[in-house]
Every structure is written in C-alpha cells, then in structure tokens.
Image (cartoon, rainbow, N blue to C red):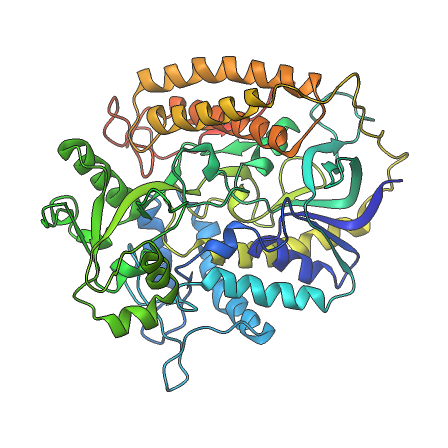
Length: 529
C-alpha cells in the first residue's frame, strides 16, 4: 500500500521545514530527506539572514541592493514580497526559539556583507543555518501531524496517467528508494519540492553531498519549466586545503574587514571594483579566478590577522576552530581560499506562491527560480527566500487542497522490469567524476561557446551511458544522484549556450558585455514530450 499524506515535502532545509510547520495545521505532512534529516544546505549556511531590522535601514534600500546584485534580471514583485515579508518571518523564528547574536542592549547584532548598503544580516555566530534548522526541527518534533522519512531518496515524480497527452498530468507524489532497498509510493494531494541546489555538479563546491540537483531534474523530467540555470553562483572563498572538504569561509569575514591578498601579500580587489573585497560575489569570484590564472597560483589568501584573536574567536568560532584543526591560525596566518560552486540562482519556475506549471507540484527555496535572485544572488537572501516562500506556498496549497478531486485509482507500483544487481559500479564513480570535472573546466566561472559545445557533446554520451545503466541495474542512491547531476549539468549547459551576453554570474569571453539592446530576459526550458 502507498504512503498517503495531504502534503508531501521533499527536503528538510529551511524552506521545507517552514512549509511543513505551517501546513501541519491543515492536514498530514510527510517530510522525505535523502540522508539524515538534519543534512541539508541550510545546516551549512554560515553568514546569516538579510532583513530590514534596524531603524536606520529601509525596505527600499534592501530592494535596491537586491536589484543591483541581480544585474537587471530580478523580478521586482518577487523582490518586494521577499524583502517586505522578511521581518515577520524572522520574528516567527525567534518565537520558535531560534537564538541570534545580540548586543548587551538586547538588539540584534547586525552585520554587513558584500553588495549590502547597510548592516542588516542577522546571525548566530557563524552557524546561522544550523541554528535555524535546530529551531525548526525542534518545533516539528512537537507537531504530531508531521512524519519524517529520513534516508529516503525520491527517484521520480508520479504523474496522473489519465490525461490526454504526456506532460499535462497532475503530480500525485513520488517513487522513493528506502534505506532497505525497497521502492515505495509516497502520495501527496500536494507535493512540494524543497530539495535545495546542485553544487555537486561541480568539482569544487561549498555544498554537502546531498546537493545533487534532484528537485530540478525530477521536475524537468515531469514537464515543469526550468529557468536561468546558467546563473550558478561561485562563492569566492572556500578553504583551500587537501584535507578540507567543502568548507566555506563566510563572506561575513570580508564584511568585518578581511582583506584578499595574493601570495606575495598584495591586495588586488581594488583593481576590479570600487567596493574592493565587498564587491558582489560574481565580481570577487571572477577576480580571484583571473588572478589565479595570471599568477599560476593555486589559491589566494584572506587576511584577518589585523582583527585580533579575541574578536575572531568570538565572532567566528566555527571558522576559527576548523582552520585551527587544519593548522591554520587565522589570528596570525592568512587563510588560503579558492572559489567554489555555492548557490543555484535559477531552478524550477514558480509563481509568488510556489506553484509550478505542473498541477499539484510546488517548489520552494533554492530549487526554484522565483525571480528574486536574478542573475546573481545578494548575500544572505537565500535563507530569507526559504522562510518567506515556505510560508507563502502554504496558503495557496491549502486552498488547492480543498478543491482537489480524489484520484480515480492509485498509481502503479514501481516496476523494476528485468533489472539486476550491478557488478559495474565503477561506471557510476567514473561518470560522476567526469561530469564534475568537465563542468568545472568548461562551464565554470568563465565560459566560451567552444567550451560549452565540448561540454554538451561529452554530456550527451555520458547521459546515454547513465540511461542504459539506470534501466539495466537495480536502482541505488548513487545511480539516482548520478542521473540527476547529468540532467542538471545539461540544463546548465543549454541555458548558458542560449545566453549570448555576459550578465551577473554568467560570464562568456565570446560575449563580454550585457545585451542591453534586447533587454534582460529569462532563459526558460521545458521538456518536449
């Protein structure tokens, strides 16, 4: 028998948990997480949440900063909704028990990050995401209508087959792989994608292993529109150390006065932007990439040595301790850093209530393209987006729930066909490595038409191999993730190839300027059935 719920949520980050808590007031909720329920991009978010919380700040200023960072591609209505509803969502978080850094007066200790014209970043030391997730999970545990299914990997969305043509069916839920190897049906009257980003598509990333683009890939295969996947944000500063895996060095260090230097000690950001080290992330990442290519050095350095040990240990305890574990004392040594894939600014197209073009399917958080981020996300707008749209989607989903007809019959069980246990798992690991390496080399911070063409040709062959493997052998989580990163890689390449200009995070040597003649426009893809 299938698992039945009113609301089916895929993903346990800030967006998914925010939705689940609100939706639980109106029906039963299942939350599926691919690994342990606390493992999500949210848990690794260091910097904070951007919101207008100081009397000297304004909604207009936050809106303008977001629009400027987005390089003309933001949807103003999405920006206004997010900025104006932000303070209310943060107040709710505090009421749930989330604890943020405060001054002795009790006021929030607001910090500043790149692209912001004011101090408006609320934070919990340098572990903001972990604190937000802790508070949300604790509240979920007190909510009887919410059931968690950890270590449960969604394979594909289930669509109603009683429709006149493929690509028009309502979403009924998902087929999912359980920890014991069985594949079961999870049915939701409303299905919500909150699966986060796809950093593992690239060789170097700040993201955890779960970030394999599952939501975008599944939605695209089901007929949902996907947009602006060419805009992948590379965080300028990931720790460069052979034993450090995906450890982010928060932008807040530069917000507090950190200096970017070359190996010889020279600063360089003033040559690239008036804001220097506090320039928007796309500018900083490109500058570091250019300097590394020019000098042949393997990294650059973030210097915090002028800040003092006491301040660094108190303000950035996690970064301080982690660097110390790798024998880097940031009070006396600059931190070696490199850019790394960090945030997916495009994704599944939704309206301002999280609805996709597939009936019954919603999407919230990093998996989406709401129009908030445009061509480049403003720092610390991501947790904010998850909170705001997690809340907004519930209202519309509850209304839709009341008007939904009951499906005429259950969808069929998963059909394994003649699949057998694999004896060729080396194919999975080899293809996984090749995709991530070719994406880094050909579809990274700087692109050309020739590089994109090479990437597409190789991806086409790899996807054929993966498709053959997927149907011949029993499904495993590794195969699910490989299939998804291959699909997402192709979407990034296709979107990048269609944009004949440089804008925001998409920089191509063949078209180094913005196409202001035709004006900013989204790159929208949808599968042809």
